[in-house]
Length: 628
Image 1 (cartoon, rainbow, N blue to C red):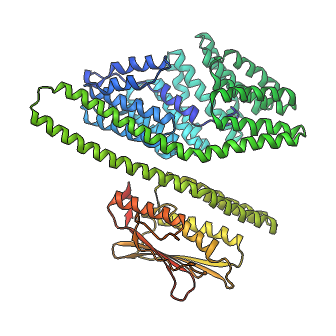
Image 2: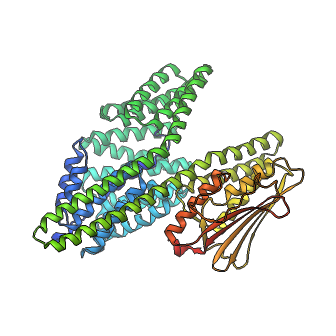
C-alpha cells in the first residue's frame, strides 16, 4: 500500500502494542514475570509461539494463564481469524475478573479488545475501549501512555470521517512531549503526531496541518539519529517523502525516499515493497516511465517474496497497468489488469473456504491444548481415590461432548456467514446493471448521483451483513426501500411496491436477522414478474401476531412453477425445487432457533387466485437487549 494513502490496520496494531506499557502490580499473584521473558524470547526467534503459550497455560498463576490466552488470541487476530481471537480474549478476561487484582489488571484486556474491534472495522467499539485505556493511563500519570491514547483516539475519529475532532485529540498529546524523558518513546509519539496531521491535511487540505506534520517528522528524525534507531529513521524519511508528494515536489520526494531506503532493513520485504511502490508512483507522476517500470518490477519482486496476493494485485493494476496505459501500450495495460483481476477473484473465491478450514484446525488445536493441560493437572492429584478418578473421567467426557457440539454449531454459523457473503456478488451485479441501464437511457446527472449514493449504501449494508447478525426493522425497511427504488429504475413501469409496519410493531427496537428478506423480494422481481403482461406488485407487511413477529411478502407474479409449500422448522429437509436462497434462510432460522431456543419458521405458497406467491416468516420478538 502506498504511503500516500492513509494506512489502517498496519499502523493501529503497532501503536497499541508499542505505546501502552503494562503496569507492575504490587501483589505477586497479580503479575506474570514469565510472560515478559517468554515473549521477548519468541520475538527474537523464528519458531512457533505454541510451546511458550502452553507453558504459560500450565502455570498455577491465573494471570499467566490469562496472558497465554491473550497471546494466542493476538496470533489469531494477526491472521484475521476474528471469531477464534474473540473466544480467547473472553477466556483471558474471565480469568482476570476472577482474580482479586482489581480493575487495573484489565488494562491489557482493554487494549486487545480495542485492537480486535478496530481490525474488524467496528470503530465505535474500538473507541469505547480506547477511552477506557485513556482513563487508566491518566490515573497512572505516565505521559507517554496518555499521549499514546490521545493519538489512538485521534486515529479512530479520523477513520470515521471526523478529521477536525481527531486532530483536536492529537493536539492534546503535544504538551506531553516535553514530559517524556525516554527518547525512543518520544520519537514514537512524534511519528504518530506527524501521521495524524498528514491525514488531517489529506481530509481538509489545511496547509498548516501539512506544515505541522513536516515539523514533527523532522523532530522525530533528529531524535532517531541521536539514538541511532534505524527503523525510526527509515519511517521518518518515508513520512517526509509523503509530505513532499502532497506538495507535488516529486524530486524532493525521490531524495527522501532514497534516504528511507538507506536505513530500511534488507530483510524487511514489506517496507522494501512499499518503498519501491512509492518510488514507481512518483516516477509515473514525473512521466519517467522506463525508470518507473523498473521500480514497479522491484516492488513486485518483494511483494511476491512477502507472499501477500492483495499487494501483488495492487502492483499489477495501479503501477504496471497504469504505465502501459500512459505509454500507449494498451495491450500490456490490459494484460496486467487481467492478472490483477485474476488474483482478486482468486482471493474472493478461496477466502471463505480457507477461513472455515482454518477455523476447524484452530478449534482442534485449542481442544488438544486443553486436554494436555487437564492431563498435567491430573498428575498433581495422583493420590485421589479411584471413585474420584472415575467421576472426573465422566465429567471430562461430558465436557468434550459439549465442546464438540459447540464446535459443530460454530462451524455452521461460519458457513452461514460465508453463504451470506456469497449472495453479495449476484446482488451487486443486478444493482450495477440497473445503474448502467439508467446511465445509458437518461441524461440526469443529479438522479444518477442519487442512485449511485443508494447503491453505495446498499453495497455497504450488504457487505457489513457478513458480520452483522441482526438489524432493526426500521433499518431493514430503509434498506429494502433503497433496493426496490434501484430495481424500479431498472424495470420502469414494471412493478410497484409498498412496505407497511403495523402500529403494534416497535420498528426502532425490534431486531430481525440481517439480509433475511432481500432474497425473497429479489425472486419476486427477477423471476415472478418475468413474462407477465400486467404490472407487478410487491407488498411487505410487518405485524405482531400473538408473541411472534410475522413478516409477509406477497407478489402478484406468475407464481411457482410447481406447487410448493413449506411450513417447516428451518433445518429439516425441504422440497427439491426450493431455491438455494431459501435453503440459506432455512439454515439461518435453524441456527436462530438453536441459539435462542425459539420456534422461528417460514412458509412459501402460491396465492389462491393463481397469481403470485406469499412468503410468511414467523420470528420471535427480539429487542436490542435480548441479543446484546
